Amino acid sequence: MAPKFTLGSRLEQGGSALISSLMILILVMIIGVTSMSISDIQFKLAGNLQFQSTAMSSSETAVVEAENWLATGSNYLNGGFTTYSSATTPHLHPIGHLAGLTAPGNDVLTMTWDNANSTEAATSAAGSQRYLVELLAQNVKLLGDDVSTGGRKSTACSQVNIYRVTARGVSARNATRFVQTNYSVLSC
Image 1 (tube, rainbow, N blue to C red):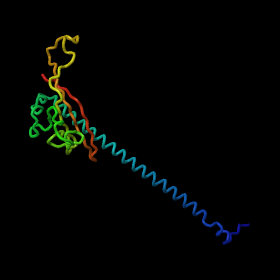
Image 2 (cartoon, rainbow, N blue to C red; image 1 turned 30 degrees about the vertical axis):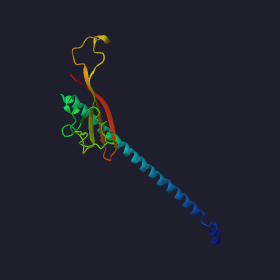
Image 3 (cartoon, one colour; image 1 turned 30 degrees about the horizontal axis):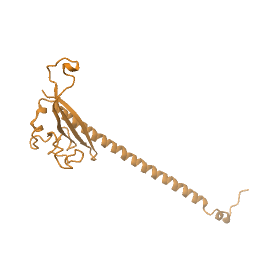
Image 4 (cartoon, rainbow, N blue to C red; image 1 turned 135 degrees about the vertical axis):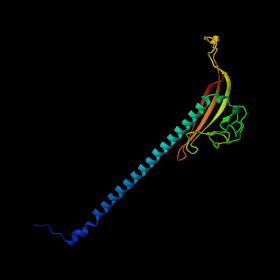
């Protein structure tokens, strides 16, 4: 015999199945929204890391360009290192030039990088790569180049000029990275 359902037995359930299924549905929806939010944050973090990496690469490229400029021909002898002139050699700074400026223009991390105090790299896209060169020391004698240090007296050049190259790279979303390096060039 088939079970008999009456109107009274249906009313006794009181909608408990509906309430429990709605609670499960709300819980699943909260888990889904949370995972989408976390995924979006991770996507943005990965993008920021990519832009920071691009900025670092740009600044390293500018350093290489500055070092190549110093190493080529007689550029290291340029008069801009002793007589600073922003009109003729904006990328060359004499000893202490940055120290003689007032803050924030005397700190490469806070100054405004423009044509008056730095050079845009040739490979730069709209100012994304800039560098400046500062002379730190002139005609420094190389160690180990005479008889007193156990070597033979050298007739070749044994003096260098030492420069500090500072480069700034900026990515498409304005992530900025700086690279500083010291570079020496034979001075004779």
